[in-house]
Image 1: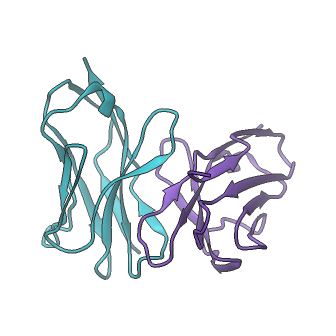
Image 2 (image 1 turned 90 degrees about the horizontal axis):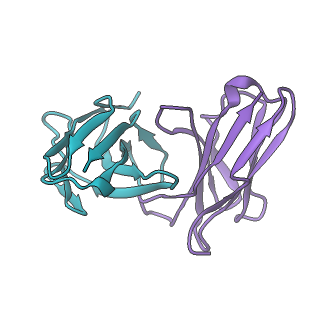
Length: 113
Length: 113
């Protein structure tokens, strides 16, 4: 596709449910990033992949958050036992190796009731 | 750690007014600096960037100059349009290019016709 796509665009979950958020990066982009954007705040880094390797997961807020990119393309961010504080927009971005420009998807808005 | 501070919004201006959105940063090394824009209903887009001191980034009539002595990267536009209404994020990448972005909290801009 022409850009980064994410699905679903909106997700409502009851507290305690597990959710899975999908990111399709731009074809050929090696690097993939996940960010969390709380209401009225700037995006905050969660984790980073280069191909299928997760090189940095220092931003994941708890062990309930897990991300994978098994074939070096599509990535999934999974949140287990969701809590209200997990409500946010989850952004995915991809880039080419050695480039400082990241291309962002439209985000998934997660609301935990 | 590294951080970005930008002026709080919302900022409301009339069409054709001059715009300045202040941004300062804290970094241990020599970061690349960015302005990203988020139009209503759309994903984050790179507006402009500068990679070293005294560089000026420009795009769509917007400009920002990398000022190392004042650790600033203020965004300016001489004559704003209604279509510039959006949220603007100042950001940096520390170190090598393929790294996480550190964002400011964002400044919402409203342009009145």
